[in-house]
Amino acid sequence: MAGIGASGMILLVLIALLLFGPNKLPELGKAFGRTLREFKKGANDLMDDPKPASRVDVSPEQPDLQKAERHLPE
Image (tube, rainbow, N blue to C red; front, side, top):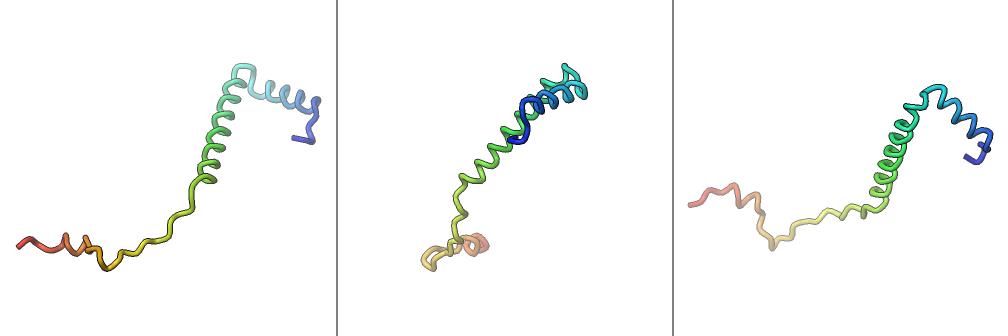
């Protein structure tokens, strides 16, 4: 908001008051704040997540559980 000075901010507040009224303006501010907070939280979660691990192959020493489950007990 570098291009908006004090007079521009006052004008924006007056227009918002005329459009929404003094009763709705605090509710809109709260909703905007919650939305911005959720967006920041989601962005931070994406930035903090480690890169997905590479695919791990099953070594021949480990039994294949899917094949073992398919056999009926004798």
